[in-house]
Image (cartoon, rainbow, N blue to C red; front, side, top):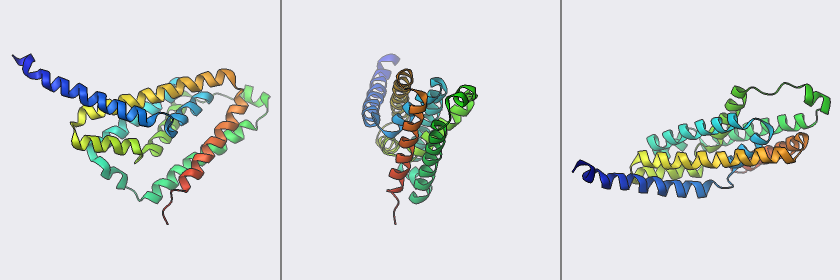
Length: 202
């Protein structure tokens, strides 16, 4: 009797989770955060990138479900845009500088630690996604449906999207020289910085 009564709730939970997952996953395919994961994974180890992105998405969706669309209003829009643009520009310049190092320096350079890569990925994803369309979508869904399945579906979709980006980035590393990847990464991040600045509201 108890299981029979619980069945509708289970069905509702799974339906909401699946619906949220489908909406968020489709919205995230080819989005800038997936491309950021791919770019970082092409230059660094994959697991720290994946874990950093996953932690960022976990926290972002907790905030979205807990505080709703008002989350994006914590800081003025222009402040958020400048922070995002600054971070992208910083990593773009670092990538271009790395592409200018000669091969001997590249071979002797110490690889970044896993924690450093994780923190870098977390910062980029967290700031870039704060108030972005997928987070606002999760917040909106949580306002009209039970929040826990919305959080589960949205987080699974974003984590899977990040994982696909990491896999694509690692495959790219096997085919493209690291110095060229650094140049591509630099141009990509600087382009994102410029794109962010175009959203400034005067």
